[in-house]
Length: 432
Image (tube, rainbow, N blue to C red; front, side, top):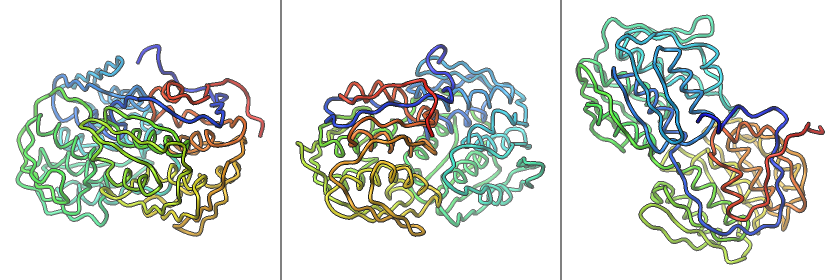
């Protein structure tokens, strides 16, 4: 996205004015949690793969840098990413590129499949808790690879990959993706049991099928992969971002407004919409979007439990806590996926939230109105949750470390402003 997105300066923050009732329509583009994996999947075929409906977020050019370090030519222009993969890509990813981006580990499976060798530095990313690569490595070993972590890098080699029966202890999205992308070029049949079922996983399967992969059970917890000798490049449209769409739905409920979201399959957030109806919202769904309305009513307290899809997404846990902070009543939020995600609660308390945590649980007693304060985002979704809370606070809230938000939400300020929010990107030193 030349000229449109640059790395955010350290001293940037969002100035958020409370009190606005959000009204209007917002369009959602491609999913962050899909596009980065689709970019990695392009490595599986020599030639040019084109992805459309890509979000203009910081993580896309970061993943482009990872692919360039592997010998690919990558062009990023507005919502289109074009990846030209050489006949013999490099098997060693660049440390500087990988260290900035957790999702970069998804090049591991494609590299083992194409090059029979992969050297990928341990990735960076959001500080939301431990995300070990044990299941990634165990799955690749089942397929015949040898793996180890040495000198801060994951090293995998394989003379031949052969199909295997693989059971995942937890339906990890990342592990499922890496094992799947290695299995499509393995000899024989691979069965992945307890596989992740997220819509973004389905999107990856559909693109791999377009490339010539043979995958049965797409969308279920059991994927059966019949290995093929080679794949072809393709053109694919990225699925709409359900997490971004749900974020705008939470914003509508918290500010007691009415927002129509277009560009996302509402069935991908069925549980979210059900929870928001329990909070007092009315909802109306269509083929490519939905409307959430509160008609000025204060939301009611609702309990949330994060689980792998089709459960309530951990990426929406900060929004659930922000909603609970202004709801009528007491809510319990249980986090079952990432143990460090409750770091966000300390910043909510700065804004006047009545919240406490105990292990995997947070108890939040809603207050009528929050109060403005300077707060710091620790990850993408925490940053979005703090902005939503700021919309419900008296006065002006400063949300710092906004580069996290820029990694996951395209045109964040512009979209909120179009709905009537008082928000601006400001350069200035934080007063800690």
